[in-house]
Image 1 (cartoon, helix red, strand yellow):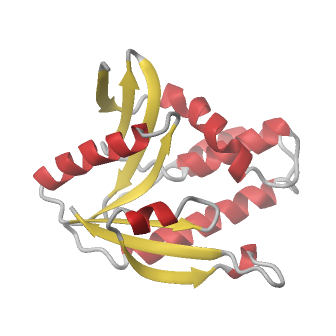
Image 2: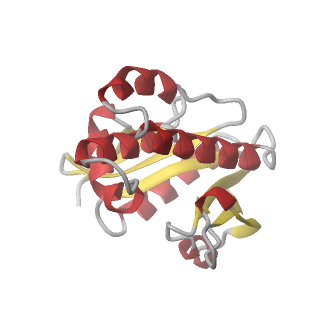
Length: 195
């Protein structure tokens, strides 16, 4: 296998949307809006830094991983302002709910971190095993750069059990009420692992 790890190329965002659209689409709106909303979620996990990575194999895009330090910011709101004009304002309530949720969970995670810690914001694999390969390689780089711990948050809609089985420590488990319903608590999790 001929693979390489390099800086994430933003042209691959539609491929990431393809992977997670079935899981992250809001219940309202047509397909263009659903894709817009999912892209907004992805862009809210890409911070303005140099900690954006992709793995390609024989030039084919296979996986991406995005990280953030305490104090890093995200400029997804600029993209949202430009693109959201294509959709009715009542649809955009779903986008606002997503943003509010992401910002809250990021804040809850950042408060647990020290300045020499790093947060995994998002990683998506298009082929089984490639996300882990990318994550392992980048975590080695991050450790060599002086970062001590990797933090992340996830929720019940993602494969959160993977982190339990791969040496991550569960720091916080909570219920996010706005996404919960009677008899169903929408669980969120914050994990940490020494690099």
